[in-house]
Amino acid sequence: MKNPVFHGRSKHIDTRYQFIRECVESGQIVIEFIRTEEQRADALTKGLPTAKLATAWHLLGVRNLGPRQD
Image (tube, rainbow, N blue to C red):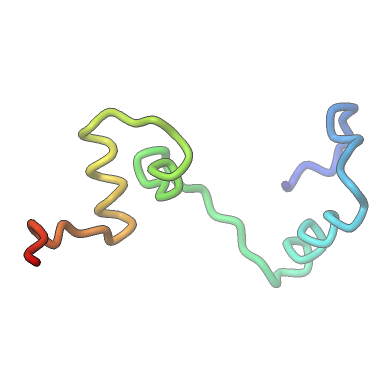
């Protein structure tokens, strides 16, 4: 995001998506580094081992409500 160098593999990106870059440059959006262990979206986008999946669920606020009682 911070590197303004044009790469051939990014040619397909439409100029309207440069809006995000402009927001970052103007300070309207702050980009922060998030360690892999703290990535919440991983539970929704990757197949994770059980331990990592449980951690991701915790980060997302997912809880087990117990067995369903009808």
